[in-house]
Length: 248
Image (cartoon, rainbow, N blue to C red; front, side, top):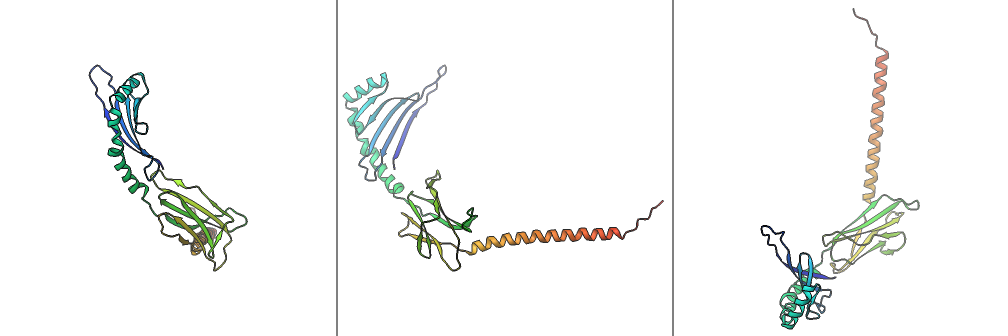
């Protein structure tokens, strides 16, 4: 993982009769390893959105990108400004980077796991199960289906680890099967936030509950149709036996 800490100093003077200008100094601490061996300090100088010069601690010198920047970079390097700024590698970057490794890279959040049945589109199997792991950090998780304690490798599909945009991730694994009475189906989850893998069992009663909801709904519909039909028949019989007498 690559991390960048950034600090910006922005000057925005707007004077009467002038359009104004933007002067921007941006300091960055870059590293990709937890031991900070590749820690790098970058000092960027930007005027009106154009970077004209930069200091790089790895090369320990200023680099110019425009005519104005090249002249200043040469002068700063000759005057020893590069050596003075090099102290920022330890004085500014290392402390913040160590905190980043400790509280960000070293931080982990356990996933919230759900195992449930969903509608199966297969003609071979009557049931599809999904094991969903939500809101875990960092990435790097493994979901394994177990059937009576043995790993299932066929009729299994999975999504990639999906980034939520808020540091957290989610993943979903699907298993198609024809369940048998008395067997145990479970999803084993392995993640760095767990001291050991955790097993989450599927409760078949949830599938029965869904079926019961469908049956109850269908029964209610049939009962409603019967009552409506009975009402129509009653109304017709009453209408047939009624005699209309004209009034003056």
